[in-house]
Image 1: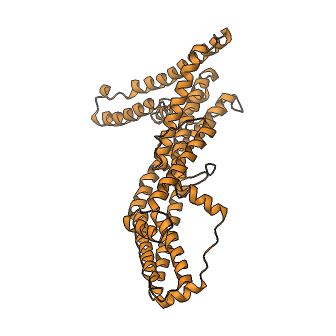
Image 2: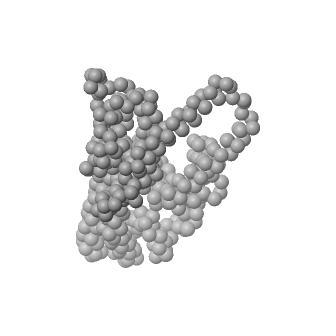
Image 3: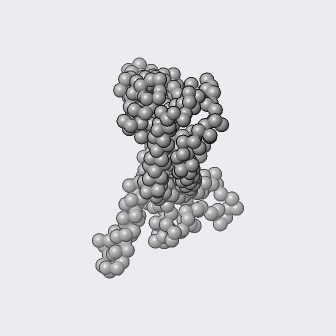
Length: 384
């Protein structure tokens, strides 16, 4: 991010010109976009530790509390089932409630007690169902990868978490890309003179762009090298500045280097305005590459969180929205805890529960419910 004390790198029209050239306009546009993306990336990097801390210290303990209350609810239903007070119709409803609650809770905490309760009231063994659904979902995910990306995931794909699956898929894509490149290399037609000339121009432009950054760096080093400074206080200041120079140069952060030149008054904005368009072209190329790298880094952070939060790929997610979503989820879990505690207290009396059970109707299943059971119950929790 731009230092608060630094001047913003922004080209103004030359004294003799009323408007900016195309290259100058592009420089200013790229400068603004890079500054904006730097701030956004810094906001992400500052938000992520806070987010994980809130999840660990606030959200996860609440979920654990909710899970324990849900287990108490299932245990209460189990205790009602064998009581003479509840007849055949009542027992069918209790059985449905237990299975429904067990399915939800088993996605969070797969304990032996829960599996025993599920098996007691279910028509099939939990481990058998899980094994079958895991296999079905694995085949489904492999089929989608084959159909959409033409990637064969094989039998070693790990579906235990979205991150592991994404990493495995990315690895396979890279392997496929490398294999295809290797296969195509011997059969590539001989390049034309026009293609060779274009490649030569591109390589030359790359070299000149790199040289432009080196020139700015050398000028800064020439002025700021602390070993040449006799005054101790000034040497400390230059040491700090040189650290910033080296960091910026290591990242090929041209804007940061120019900002440092402005900060130490090695150049001024008039100097940038007088810069020839031929040199500005190489500056703009560097800025384009830098912007692309920032965009990609931000994109990867957003996509990782959207995958965890089950958000559509086309929805934008900001650091503020991430914390807002977490706060909403936290309040929702708190509300669920309040509700289930009230239910546990209210239905502790079997006669009260039986009176409520008369009003309860087992929901009818739809085709969508069957699909959800096949697809979502077999997915690792992070994919749901």
